[in-house]
Length: 242
Image 1: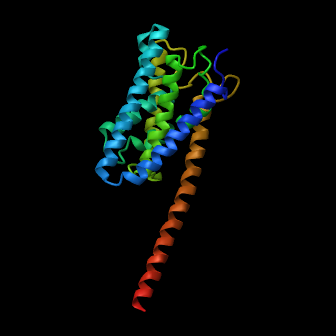
Image 2: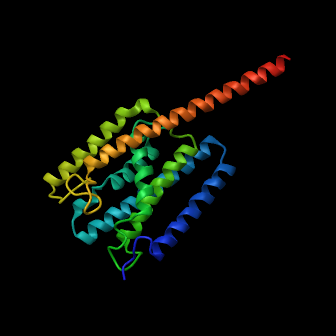
Image 3: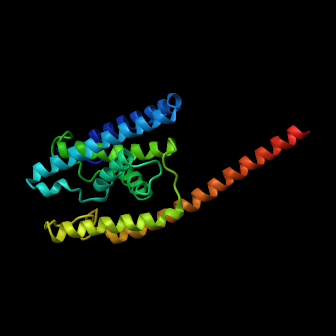
């Protein structure tokens, strides 16, 4: 019997990855204080993510006997590649992160929770399967690290980066379909889940709504936090004057 979503292999993977992620982030938060060391950890994690997505694309290309499959044809696959390179090569809070971060953290999390590809082979450690889970998992993990280490700060004023990045993915998907003969790419034609309306056009609308709601909540929380700091500072100054 092939591995199943929420089957025992999947649940063990989720539990193991969750423990690894929580424990490692706590330890990093306790022991890694120096900014230089934070950058080293981030770039090492980005390098691991790069290795995982390269492994995934090579294994998919070999199993399908098609070299063009080296090019990621999904939002998560391409975002794992772009995110790893943006951290390895780019600077703190670079413009690429203001697009790819959101896809990576949402797509990475949702996919390890509900990996539709998990039953493609009888072995859970089939290279296409395990490399897919690892690159999705580490895409989510690296995204969380970027927030915790302060290497990325969400900014609604960078909304244009989302539009540019989205159109770049769609153009690449169109190229893969029309030039390389892909049946689909970036869910332009077929939905991510069979029997649903979840093509890229519908997903794009959902993503836009979530993006707006996220920043509404984020900005409200940030302003309340700043007001609390100002209030504490004013009370401290009044106390010192007294």
